[in-house]
Amino acid sequence: MKRELLRMDHVSLEAGGELLLDNLNFQMYAGEIMGLVSRSYKGHDRLIDLICYNHAISFGSVWYDGRVVNRYSSSDGSANRVYVIEQTSHLVPALGIGDNLFVLKKGFKKYFINNRVLEEQTRRFFEENGIWVDPGKRVDALTSLERCLVELGKALLLGCRLIIVDNPGNFLSQHELPQFQRMLKKVRDEGVSVLYVGNHHEEVFRMADRTSLFYDGQIRKVFEREEMTDQSIAPYITAWFQQKFNPETEPEDGVLHFHGVEAGSLAELRFVLHKGECLTLLDMDNRIAGDILSLMTGEMSCDGGWISLDHRSYTQERGLRYLDEGVAVIPNDPVKNLLFPDRSFMENLTFLLDRKLKKSLIPGKIYRSIHSEYGPLVGPVIDETSIKNLSLEDSMALVYYRMALLRPRVLICVQPLARGDMFCRMKILDLIRGVLKEGTAVLIITSHVSDTLGVADRLLVVENGTGTASYEKHEFNRILR
Image (cartoon, rainbow, N blue to C red; front, side, top):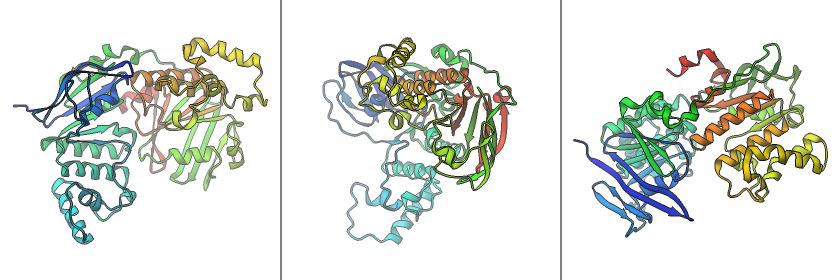
């Protein structure tokens, strides 16, 4: 018989005049992996926060491990035994693994610590739980997978019966993710529950026993195991399956070439990118993006091989003026890295356009023309005097509109769908299609392939810094099996 671990019963939460959770009902059982896919991001963070902490709610009640822990009439802000594993580490990097697991644990009272005994204690604990990480390592030397495994061990040591895993595909490589998923299934089989949060329903469906679809503060649908298919979810996210733009490419018109490039983690990497084409590099080791960006922006030069842009050698000197050479870059987390929160929408949109026009000031006629062109596309937010309060979807759109305005020859996007809900990712895919339609060549570097195939024309699998497999568009169905 299933034992209920968590129940949120008719929970509503209002903050800042906005209803973030609206009569929400959510239930998890002990020893199950529940998937969570957000169709919109509204209320998503508050839902996770309420599972972890008993903050004030406007209506309803929360049950955890058989007792009421939170209700609208009384909320004490206490923490539930829930652990979150996410992109940001919750370990102290300057300390060892044993220190993080045992010394920092509440109730540890020893004044003198024998490191050898501590390491042996850690080793035994790891062996008992099937965690294969060297206990002698310092936290700051751990790989992403090892860090997640140590945090998983810490959650078990703390007695947490519910572990929330937030989008692991965004920070684990294609090799690491299956290993971590196997460990999650192992702890599930031992009675620990896992809430597996993912941006990609395909990934969540493969992992979960059941999946909840979260939308505008409510759980709109719970998919049982036999319902977790593309066909079942399609009516709830119809726009996700819209007609894809398929640009006509000119095979002889290669814009960007990597000719056996060696630099950093790259080992004789070869590919060609054509005008109006989207090529996705699937980074199996999650480590090539930084090296490619450093090469394209002049921070690094090739140790072997060479790069050509428009059939001319792309030297480090050209890379230092990459914008003038027609190369644009959208890094991971572009809202934080590319936008100025205290500037207006139009100032952010036209940033760098003076460089493109080779004018110190943008003429008023051009400024007004841009406002007229983009006004119908972006709506009233175009007149925002500060973009601080823009939604993530509008902020991401602003980044891509700016790049489209620059009309680059090549646009490089790193993990473009790593953030945001389904609507936000749909918007990004549409914007990439628009850039392609203008003839820009788009290079996507990602460690998670599922959704980028919607815009990609080709896929190159990169492992140990070199291409190991290549797929044309008509072969993509082989990848998703």
